[in-house]
Image 1: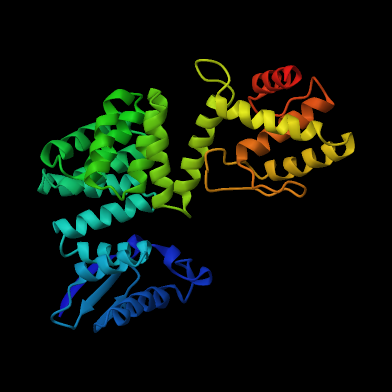
Image 2: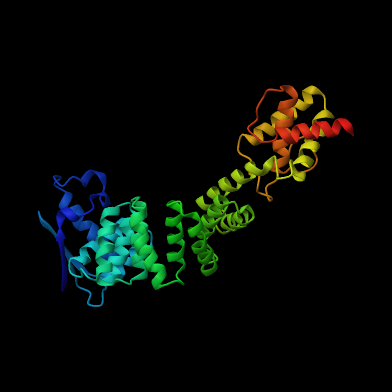
Length: 354
């Protein structure tokens, strides 16, 4: 029987029910043993667990059982604390296993235990200095610890060792961007999306970098790709926020003045409101404002809005123009938060001369 032993103090008590987490509890040691017994049963193995006042000992009775592979399998199911705990036990007998160290280090980093992650991954790289994903994982952990300058060294080495690794390229670009070295960051993100065209995070970061550099067409393309790849997650929300910021910045004006698209939408809104009675115009403005209070995705061409009394579907830009024009017709000093005053003034002036 192969046996692994760790100090009892190394056990993660958050894995236990609340009522037995206190080491002084009479049921604490049995709860710890039950945790490992449950893990052993779940993995289809046989074993013996002993918990003393100082140590936990886990012995595997199944000859073919691989505790490192078992711990990694638990991590891959999303059970980070459980998998990390099994790997910690196994580490007592296999302190230099690269697979164990890498996966344990990544798990600790994902759990926010950054100092532990950095120590584990540093040990891995002492054993295998060119472990590409170990280099990247260390850079990520250092970045999460806000040790950005230190993160550059392992990430740069990872790209040097494996320039075709998209994870290395993406994370080096991300650290350079956080260090305000945006121009240097972009080529790494361009490479990352070429190597991994379905990586929504890489497209998102590329779009953000392009928006900062003023390459708005590239930014819109990358951000649109990111939100398509992750249509229901946080990536889409972040992409939408940046796209809306770009749209708001460009909504009212281009280099030549009011954009033709914005002017056309505003002329339609002003004309529509002028065709109604004051009360009906106020009611339509209020309906548009109720849509606007939930947020208008000005760049979402697939999103349309319907308002009672208007037969056609409306874009977010047309709804914004209705709100702005309706409010301005009631009060010349009112503000709507949309950068549409120039478009409103131009539309009103042109309609008067038509």
